[in-house]
Length: 336
Ligand SMILES: NC(=O)c1ccc[n+]([C@@H]2O[C@H](COP(=O)([O-])OP(=O)(O)OC[C@H]3O[C@@H](n4cnc5c(N)ncnc54)[C@H](OP(=O)(O)O)[C@@H]3O)[C@@H](O)[C@H]2O)c1
Image (cartoon, rainbow, N blue to C red; front, side, top):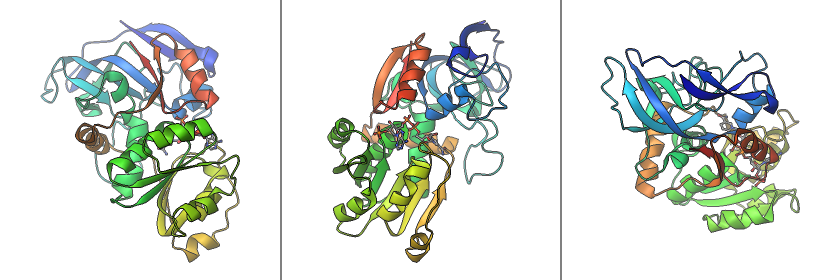
């Protein structure tokens, strides 16, 4: 048996501790003792029933976790007990271009996630944790970190001297800030909080714009870049921010469409997109390979994920409430 938290009905009230039976790992499987999970906005949407109202329940939530291998099944050669590992968000997306199967088997819905004392995963569903990180820090990488890496590196081909615009100061955005800095790029941050902007500058952002006092922040970004515009935008705002992101990007620049925090649909004047050859690229987290690449980069550059709050394992509801508040700067983590 293993202790889990499972979602029995949609809503924060539906999160309940429970016992699940856990068999020995079968051929090709690995049993992992989970040391920490991090929460993503997606996990909150999943719990509230807004991500997939047809999700079968009960569900063990949370896609992102890290821990230690405790047992391996027959034929497993890649892992040994004691290895420190992270779960792979999209269990069937090992490498290469995305296709229609990549998003079908993802942890934390539709598959059970990592909010459990122990989990069993296929041996390909794990990646070695960076040596430089604790479990709590490594647990931040599989969704938020990989999404930022996918946008800026795997798709964006970021280069030294580029300028990157990140929106907000949540998990994806701060990884984007740190990954951009590690590649020698400059970063501009747009946030709804002066205090968070000051913290983003302390992390290496060269400028911050308060979206409340400067609602036309696209023009402000143009001014900060001498009229050139930014090379890349990590767009997590969605409907309420896309028009300003289009204003902020340089001709031929790229906007990674990642999140829809302020809504899913809006009217966009496409003339600026086509006249300036702007590239709009939707993207869905990333592959196992991207998590491996990010893990090596984290070790090589001493990147330390920004954890806003680290809460004890049984503080699941307060952790989700903190995420829902939008007050966080970086990641919210539950650790043993
Ligand atoms: N496409 C994908 O594969 C993928 C992967 C990961 C995440 N996402 C999506 O990306 C978004 C961010 O995810 P996350 O996990 O980084 O979230 P998060 O950690 O909860 O961060 C959210 C941050 O965004 C800012 N924000 C909140 N509401 C906003 C609004 N209405 N308009 C503009 N900014 C707002 C806030 O920063 P400030 O207070 O500084 O403004 C907040 O701290 C979510 O929509 C999530 O579903 C998509």
